[in-house]
Length: 84
Image (tube, rainbow, N blue to C red; front, side, top):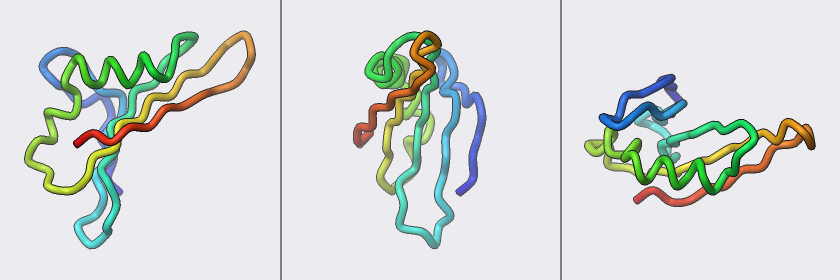
């Protein structure tokens, strides 16, 4: 996979976008990282700000991934949703 950090979307930046190699049957990933918020909120931000729109010419599947790190509990949670 090829990764792109801080990809501009027109309304902000996705934290990380991964593109699979052409010979792999894997989805592209749009990842938003949060600190002391929620993974669902990260997914909502990806959708509201159109972060996945930047890869509109990509013809494979897209997976939206929200990851939150909880500082107090020292744990992380994540949420995954199909993006197309």
